[in-house]
Length: 288
Image 1 (cartoon, rainbow, N blue to C red):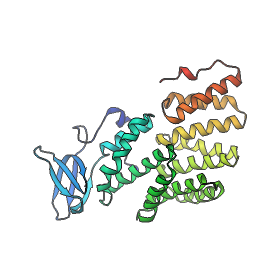
Image 2 (image 1 turned 120 degrees about the vertical axis):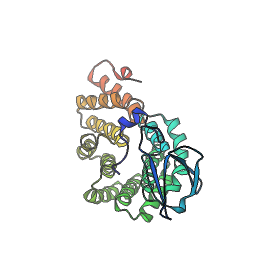
Image 3 (image 1 turned 90 degrees about the vertical axis):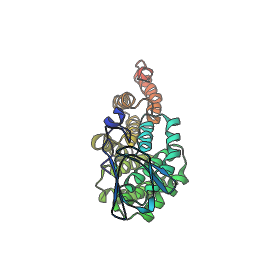
């Protein structure tokens, strides 16, 4: 999806319902519409705060034809927490993602945000080694989605899980076909990251490096795969005995994403690389 708020917007603190954001328009199946300044989920119902003020209006999700809105606050918070490596906040937000976004699951205009929440949740689950949970979420999208873009994105994750289950060659074959048919940045960034990881797993370091480097070159705004791709590229440079390139890559990673999981791992690797180069360690000098 290309309508996500940028990291600049996240940094500016644009949360759903503030005056800085556009209004939410909920179109009901009876032809009427409601303009709201905030929306929250209450089970199978949506609570709408009227734009003009006053008491909240509660409507059944099944009665909604479409919702036009910017990114829900819980999704904004989860993206920001995970991108900055705040795992406690990330896990707290992840626990709320399905509760708050599930009512939007089958509503045009809202489903896009539910899907994005599920793809983010899959990344978080993988970081926690919760492979089965990530697979269950992606299989649901791959089986039920009528949108080929989100279906293909889910298939990218499922191919990755095939590799993690012990068959990296099959994963690479699947990823190759998915990349050929993908056009959106979200799918491609994840697909090239996973391709790099499975190329590295079969010790094809040069091919892995090329795959990893596609992410910062072509998809630098995709912050979640960006850090992992930079770390993967640095490891490839080490395997290829290009320690100066590994050091440059790691310093970029640590400067941009110091508290993320890749950033923390990158500091450890940078210390080793600088030791091998005979240099004083700079890893602890990175911003915290």
